[in-house]
Amino acid sequence: QVTLKESGPVLVKPTETLTLTCTVSGFSLSDARMGVTWIRQPPGKALEWLAHIFSNDEKSYSTSLKSRLTISKDTSKSQVVLSMTNMDPVDTATYFCARSYCTSGSCYVRYFDYWGQGTLVTVSS
Amino acid sequence: SYELTQPPSVSVSPGQIASITCSGDKLGDKYAYWYQQKAGQSPVLVIYQDSKRPSGIPERFSGSNSGHTATLTISGTQAMDEADYYCQTWDSSTVVFGGGTKLTVL
Image 1 (cartoon, one colour):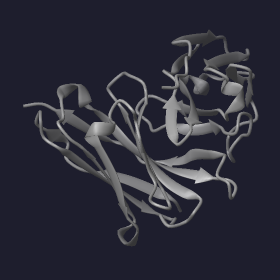
Image 2: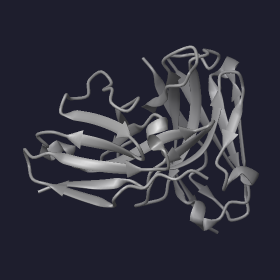
Image 3: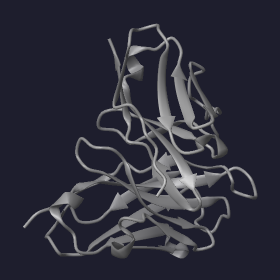
């Protein structure tokens, strides 16, 4: 079955770089229909999209956070890595990874059908 | 950048119809997706491609999208439907989420 699991530090200091790993199983990151996205949710607040990586290694980023984010994947390890630089207490949030699935060759319809459990990252000195 | 706007909260009595709207510029020209998030859990896809239900989602969930507004409708709302609901679309290769709507069943 399809699973995604986020891993990384639970606590980071201000100005540090956060590196999170999403380990997937049950599908291949090289499958043209698949992609992986990162989303975060500050406590009590809304979902915020961060970045997406497509099967062809194309990447897209949130406009507001683009300068701080890097997404990459290692298909052989079934892992997607997100890095966020210059962490600040306002970046405290639960970080989710999710699989995107497209229903046709054109991938005009693409949705997030499987999500990880999320990992809470606290930014504090 | 593209924005989606949702009402912060909607209340409904058990057994009644709940409607949650999501507004965006010419949203009807894009596809809308809806996610349900219960307290302490990860989001779950309940509607994709405007009006399609994934396997396992009850028939009482339905969706529509036209003009500038997408709507999630829950018919015969049950207490278990109390949750936060988020709309989402793609703007080119970027993902946009609405601010979420808290559905209260009382």
